[in-house]
Length: 69
Image (tube, rainbow, N blue to C red; front, side, top):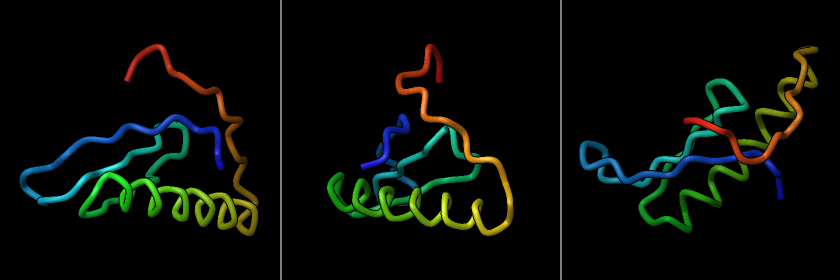
């Protein structure tokens, strides 16, 4: 499991749980349930990291809990 902080919230507009990964710019996922959103986020984080490696983009080190969001 990735050690990046995630932010999860429910969006009434989207009728879904949204997950954002602040340390990986643009990395977001959603799901109908909290569990599905978290599973999708894990997959998307891996894809983000794999794509960054292929493109030569630096991969941020996971810092864990942020002091602000």
